[in-house]
Image (cartoon, rainbow, N blue to C red):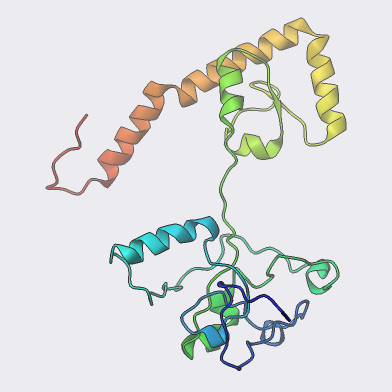
Length: 227
């Protein structure tokens, strides 16, 4: 047997798939990454869009809640942040799995989309914050916390008062050692952290925020939500 044929990469009927020139600087030269199955002659990668969430698409189609040939509208789907390009993206020996144009398909492959190609984003760039419940649990218990500035973006705590910030191994070590040798600092950071969490993330505070959002977004004439 010369090769193994994968069910996720069916026969092209003798027609070669569009080539992907990995590492090309020009997206027109690199070509789109096509993982959709609507027209298998254009499919040039193995796998499924949405990864493990692809099962939900299959269930929606089986339940006749989604058309099998549905195509998403990519209008106004620009990334929240522009990243790169970086030199490593254009070296096929360095870049392995990141699609440099995966978040810009509606822009760089607009001509192919207009011609009927079903090209979809392969990566998403958002402005989400890292939220670690363990951090808030420790602060709520009055324990002094050392964390990174990235994690604190999702908390909004004041460094040096509510917690300590360290973004590299040496600083993390220094901060922890300092806490171990300074009981007063431990108590001060722990107490401030507990007060911060109580004021920002207690059940009562979060519930009031949700009620405020409801008040601002509920349209006139609709019945109020149940308590």
